[in-house]
Amino acid sequence: MSRDLRKYARQTNVRIAVGATLLLFIVGLGLIWAIYGFGAAISGMLCILAAFVPIGLIFIALYGLDWIVKRANPDEDRNR
Image (tube, rainbow, N blue to C red):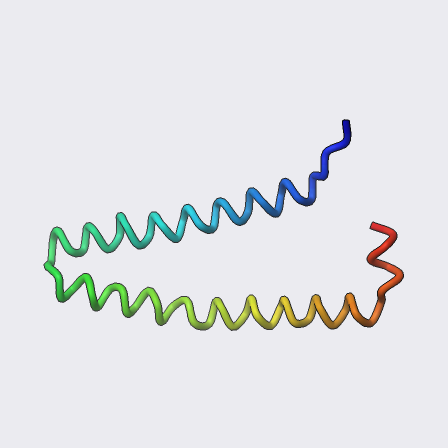
């Protein structure tokens, strides 16, 4: 039985990213709310969302570059 290790690695990376994001929002903002109050938690959420904007732009750019490379070299993708 053959395993697709690339798919497994990709799936693991997605699970780690989702878990870290949930941990950041639930635990991080929950602690801010418990210690400093609701207003500070809203400010913390705005800061976290503002930090995700450049990260999202980087991922969009990398996805776009990957798409361009795959369209330019369709034969190389079949060899993998």
